[in-house]
Image 1: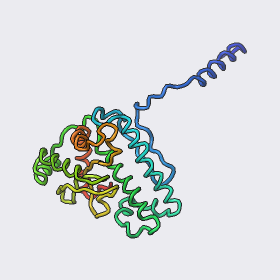
Image 2 (image 1 turned 180 degrees about the horizontal axis):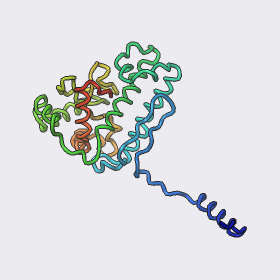
Image 3 (image 1 turned 90 degrees about the horizontal axis):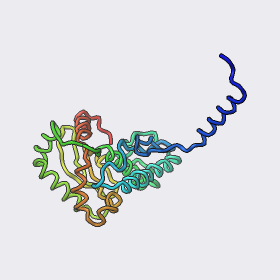
Length: 246
């Protein structure tokens, strides 16, 4: 193979430099962002675009909710873990399930921030576009324990509407697969009571205010259009197997 001429070499180098200097188009919604976090706790990436739930949940709310609120809980936990490294070394369920063993000086901060991290990690998991409908064992459990789908949704929405201030409404699942509806204030998680959430909805205003303002009942009704029943079925099977973590 003959070597390149000086003119060809200069031309090739110029072309490569120009290509390197040309800005690349970034399509933010083309693929999930990588998990982020500098420490033991990381922000899980969304597995769908932030505009996936419009018009039910607007894109800006999703961006702020995941990228600001949830990421703050993660950052706060990593700050706490710098002085209390064992908190980042233990499984999350062990820490939340034994808050009494957390040092007094950071217990409230851990309750709020690790609880928020756990709640939101679950929240992003059980939402997804084209989530289908409940069937199989999950639907059977809803019929058996919650009076059928219509009554379940009505009671779940009513419980979420009764939360004063900020908090969550959950469907609790025990190891036998029995379901119940419970609420928690602030960022409290059922793990703190030795229980597990099959699913849950965030009724903090940051979850809905840009679209719904003070109309929480409208948000609660619309949110059902974002539920991923396939993922909930997976969580139900894990709960019965005793492997459901967050």
